Length: 248
Image (cartoon, rainbow, N blue to C red):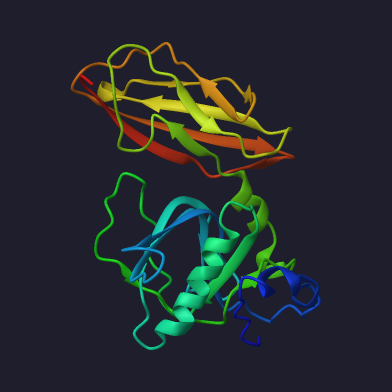
């Protein structure tokens, strides 16, 4: 596969050319993602690290055509010492595509693509960004069947956010709408002493889906809640958030 490193302009104007490219016998891309947002540090002018937030399907090194189920979180990278200029060009494309819903891929299956981190995990010890085959749009090919749907179906648990603190009593769980009007949302909350509760299927309202379990949360305890979606006979991976109960 030729190297396809995009600028902000060519990321979108070369779509027809990319879609016409033949599917590879095996898939060399390291990670596919739908990016929600990026955080450049220490600033956007001279970044040394980047947080890439979204949903990610990581390549399985033991199978040249398999990607692990999509997970929500963030990747944390530092500049590639081999080619910082090319790294910054790809990071600029990450920023350009963030929030558009466009699924893209980068890196190499044969190199480390980084570790998916939970939202509650503070950024530390960034992974070195690995340049692979450039940035590519997600193609329709046997090795990538269903990846795009998986990426777009994983909801964002927005409140309580992962790592948040809430007051005791009833808690309202809120997930961001995935943009599919046919999707149904399922919630689960798990607490101490194996207490848990599941929701019925819930249709999204304007921009979000929410559920208030009857289980009341108790001061000093931690709770985990999960949300997933179903649509067109597909079920997404769970998105997971943990919160602690205490005075605010």
